[in-house]
Image 1 (spheres, rainbow, N blue to C red):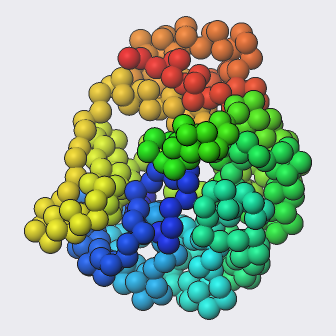
Image 2 (cartoon, helix red, strand yellow):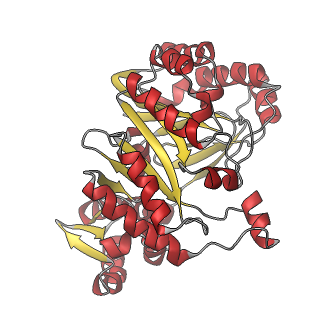
Length: 374
């Protein structure tokens, strides 16, 4: 089984915290769609006999695509790839795009899962992030979507300096009222070359507070558990049967193919990524040349990546898998270096798997890097 990621590199406006590749200029949208479909056709041979169990439209803002655009892309996929009959097909969407007409149209395509970028239900937060939607649109987009889609996920952000603990709890309570099946919740971070980074450096925005983010994470874990969500990955909370197949493929190091500008692919041994430039991407595909760079991963790289992804999930790191895939020396290294984190109750061993404790969850990336082989 494999996954397919489709990067749609257009947005109405730039969010202050975002460093994903996108353009607010949609002048070349039709040329891009033509190039995207051509790349899909060219690269179909890379999957060999792998069957797609997930198709994910990410971005950017995929909900800017029309009903016709989506159907055209999906037709190319179904004509050139083997797709599982129960494949999860996700479209990321912004609330301001999800009016009744749009949602009805989406429900008539093969899309069966919506991931809505709410981020906050409060107007001041949305303005500070420079989001394109307002609070009313955030709520209305969910109300409409859950009438036409069984599988609806939302994104929320926490850790913003002006977001009190009480306000964060209210965000969660509003989300719970919709009886959603899935939520992704992220601590805001300062990414390079973003407006947020510039604002903080020029004292136009307060610096982020790790202690505040940690408290918000503690509240998040406690309240989602009471609402019967399973915390199956650091940022992901799902009801049984509604874990994201797309993200789970990443965490289990399954084969995934990424198409579109800046999209990444992984086949178990090498990673490749497309150029982050719409014009260069379009022109390259027109000339039948894939605009990508690739890297062959070393044994150490693969081991480190397994640690990074595994510790983020409820399944943890299987010591048996480590020994089978990498050898006994890697297993010995892992056991030796994890002792300190086990002793300080950040990690624990269960059924021959190394997992993070509640205390260790918020620190898992740092713990993973401490266990790396460099």
